[in-house]
Each structure stands twice: as C-alpha cells, then as structure tokens.
Image 1 (cartoon, rainbow, N blue to C red):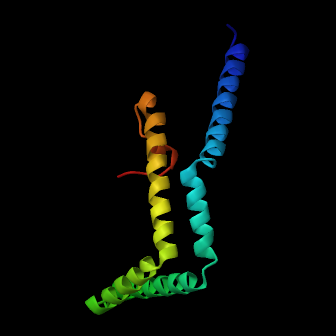
Image 2 (image 1 turned 135 degrees about the horizontal axis):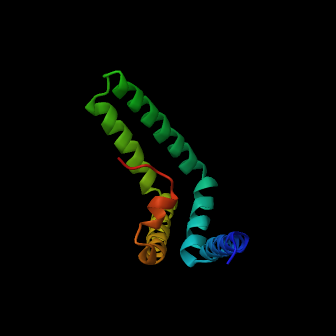
Image 3 (image 1 turned 90 degrees about the vertical axis):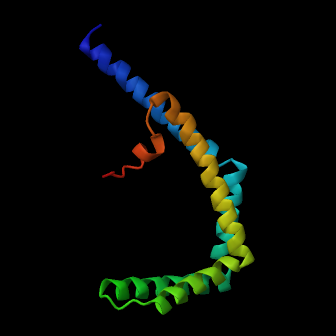
Length: 133
C-alpha cells in the first residue's frame, strides 16, 4: 500500500469517527434525561425569583471569595452564602433543575463508560482537555 493510500484511509477513518461523534451528540439530545434537563433549565431561566436568587448567590460567592483572598472572610460570611444557596435550592423550579442535571450527568457518565471501555482510558476526562497533576 502506498503512503498516499495510507493517508486517504486514515482520513476516511477520521471522518467516520467524527461523523459518529456528531451522531452521538445528536442522539444524546433526544434522550429523555437531556430533554428533561433542557426543559428544567429553561424554566429556571424564565423564573424571576430563581434568577434573583441566583444573582444573590453569585454576588455573595464573589464577596466571600474576595474576602477570603485578603484574609477577611469569616464564618458568618460562609453561613450567609450557604443559607442563600440553600434557599435557592429549595425553590421547586431549582429542585427540578438539580434533579434533571443529576440524571443527565448519570446518563452521560454511563455513555462515557461505554466509550471508554474499549479505549482503556476515561474518554470524558481525556476529551475534556483538562490537565491532571
């Protein structure tokens, strides 16, 4: 086999793998877990009280992180952040979102395991591009 033929064969395999990856992504969007997640996400995005509480939690988190960096964070700051986050998570719309997110993550982990098994690597970890120490 010539070098050109080898290159063409490799290109064909690469295209096939990329096409299969795209088909997998499209199939994932049809999963009930994905559809539930997207619906719950939209509900949270459209829920005024949830959005206000999310903004509050983010503000408290930023303030806490800044205070921690300069050594001025205390237990009261942490408790205020945790309390605001608990109140956010107690909203029914957020409870549904968090449950849907957990279900989708579980399903994606199972898919990752199925892909990773023949590769002898953790595909999701490797594909994510993150570095490990």
